[in-house]
Figure 1 (cartoon, one colour):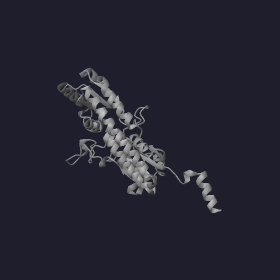
Figure 2 (spheres, rainbow, N blue to C red):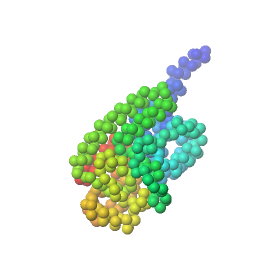
Figure 3 (tube, rainbow, N blue to C red):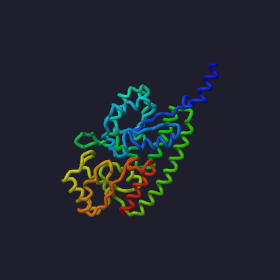
Figure 4 (cartoon, rainbow, N blue to C red):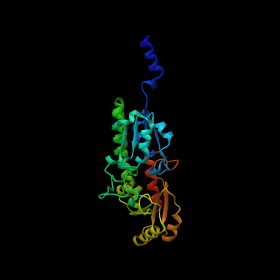
Length: 297
């Protein structure tokens, strides 16, 4: 009778045996990578929205409740989310998340850029001591991140280890091919330097050999001041810069000032998956940025 009941349960309720992994990510771009790697074997949700600044997420009790059932949390890391993710994990009372295997921080494993060489103080703004965490706009690092995610999913769910790895390897190869095409298109624009609001584009610019040395923020995390904006305008005139990318997690209220002062061409663009309704994948996000720059040449 017990054998009959067990067989009945397996065939009638297959999710009992083949339950999906439950994954939470800090941002939608990471959720998109998890979906690409895990496909039908994972359920994934992002805490932050694609239109939100991940530095400024509120640690809501509702997020703690959602984290109670997850098997894995995936973050950018390098202290991008620590102010709110750590309290959420602790407040979830999910004993699985006490294991190092259940929390994956990616950026530190992807050769971080802008790692400070000196001791930091708050006077320098929101500078991350481990380096810049915004790797999500670099297709090569996205591919590398998919391999790290596949490895961790395989450790938690060994029965699907090869499935996850195969998906990640395919995704990684595809992004390498796309990166070459995107680079060719950007080179044809003749644009070699852009002004940005925050240092969100550092990895994108490095990958595609575009300089992004001038930011509208006087210091990371500090909104533009009148004096700093005058300084930026002066630099743009001297260096003959005319392309400005403003992340749509920030206001573009200074767009008209830049257009009037230096005839700047300004694009208000998403920097996370779901930053615009039609952007649901990492590839679509980078395509959106490449197309935006092409339109500003």
